Length: 332
Ligand code: XIL
Image (cartoon, rainbow, N blue to C red):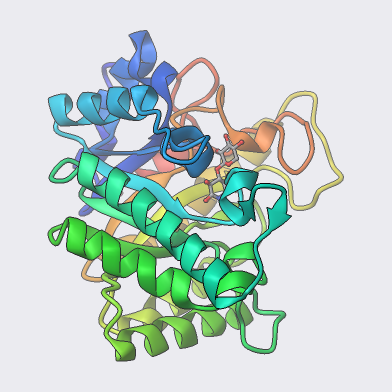
């Protein structure tokens, strides 16, 4: 890795995190991670399918490995995620072969499973995981009430959110508890999430913060929309974190490059700069910014939503600093 360039974590006034897996803790990847970052989020290792594949059978080898690594190196750990509609095994929403319904018995069964899951994960890492994404992607701005019709919601209404936050808080009162979502920089989604957080907080649900995923692309949306979102949530007096930042080199889902042109990478660098200008201006609201991957050799965007070369991160696939990296370095 390049040793003669500034450590990014010294350039920003908040925790700088990266989404990682075991591979990012090893060899040169580990060197790059420790040189530049002060926080980590496991990309997949703490999701339900990875931690409780069968009811009551917990698997923690990968999670423990990353948490131990973070503790050993003094990295802040974001736990991701306790309740989500994706990467959740089918058994969670079934009783044998039968799909759970919204009957009182089925609701109680699902909430019991959630309670057990949350208690087990938050309890295992108490004092080691500083921040949890308690619920992920629960908003759907195209529904009249702004709530995603996930199985969680169809069976329990908002009670899965209330239960997850309550149990997480009871289990580790010191952990910061977040509600996390994507597209929060778009006005309709922003308002739907805002309304939900406001309502839940008024009920006393222990929400400490709002996570903005910020999966952006080279053109959209403008940084001014991101800023508007941060300012909007500041009025709710919640902590805010940028949880999954990346900047796709494509403005749409059809184009593909064999090699990303240098001018596109330069443009991406300006995009990162614009965004970090916003984050720095709002350092009183933003306690952490996490990029969704350490380097371009491992990004979910090379397979999602279609398989194509992408390069959305700060370091290239040979772990060298990109213009995007220089966009983050403090201009002062
Ligand atoms: C992604 C992971 O990066 C991929 O490896 C996995 O195949 C799918 O999930 N929003 C989230 C993250 O909250 O958990 C997702 O992570 C990316 C979108």
